[in-house]
Image (cartoon, rainbow over the protein chains, first blue to last red):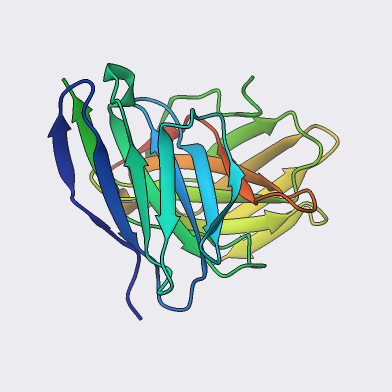
Length: 113
Length: 115
């Protein structure tokens, strides 16, 4: 059984650019969520995907968007990057209905200059 | 509006002693509470959870206690080991019908277990 994987591990972008982060869910997990963790803070919920559709969103603007693919892998896209987008981006997967067991990937650290 | 609070940013405990990490919450609609451990350069690792209808859950060296009237939960680690040194996050889930189950995290407590 493979765990949650994310790519890339690190990324440097400049303001105004666009970025795509990728996540492969743990085998058998059909629900994926994305979180943003700023320095010194706990992770903040961005959105969740199930059956390739977004079915919940946190307090993030529309320039944060995502996709889920038939194999349950997922992408997070951020347009018009701002300096405050610098953070660790975490992907978590679970089986729908098993809300108490979410498993996280190692994260992608994004730096916006 | 911080719904889940961990008021102690850091804690130092001697090896073999008990570590107690605390967490307070404000939202009475939370269904589950979870504890995650995080090492640098890794994602959070699930440790233990507790349903809002229970007051205690135990798994090996880890026990979580929930006091609903006080809106408080705590994680006890006995005995503490050097490998337990990490940042511990308290998280809570609320899942109203038709919405996503999202985790709401505290800001974390850094545990240092000394020899």
